[in-house]
Length: 307
Ligand code: URA
Image (cartoon, rainbow, N blue to C red; front, side, top):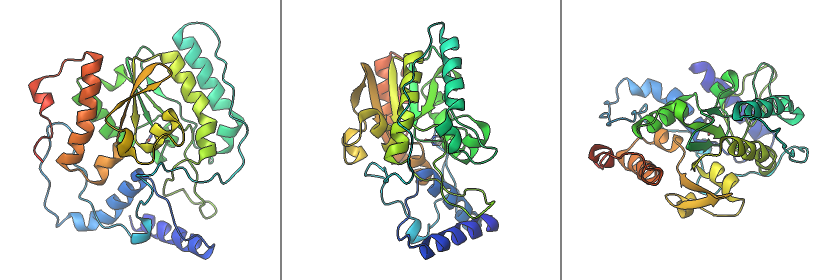
């Protein structure tokens, strides 16, 4: 714990010395920081009441002022910092869904730009789940856990996403889960150090990976898409489609003829696990359940109403 904090502090100091005055931090990173910073305070903090099905995260702890997320309501695309190749033109072969998906996986894993952005021992991440899924969830980018395991949403936000899906009465394996990005957006670290935080993708990174996401949508052909957070919404709706997530969340949109619901990223709950925040996401998911014809019990309809 102390080592992580030291690494973050050193990295911030180094960036400051290099002339960097602001740092953009993803919600997942903030959550990790809170966990680290909050562990000491947690022993004395009162436990929060459990909710029907979504977990209660560690109590929020103060985050250093300069690390506070300031770009979350504005689609968080930073200027590109490194040249990327032209976004790939993905042409999938014919065949069955598993054959086409396997071809896509080989393509993405072998893609020179994807590989060039990996640190040693880390993995390119493609979506997972049922290729016959009616529901496809789209997140932002792999984080620390995801780039190790090569699977999206396996860290804290992923565990929460899984609970959200289960609360809808569906198993994780029945849906398809992907990301806008196929690699973990890099941050500079000292030689030989592990990357500690995350950052939102640049516009160039987002544009580069989008064809891979489109190809996954083409293979799976879900009936409904759910964009998790501003970056996913921006990737699917287009840059400049909105200024604040509030403008588009909780409403139906269209992605190539597929109804698309925009909601918050699970990290929005991890940051502040209040019934109000859970209810906001839950209301969006209720809309998805209703439109998808999933059964909705009175109990499910009432989740997180205690504000
Ligand atoms: N957050 C995301 O948006 N995607 C992941 O795969 C993990 C965390």
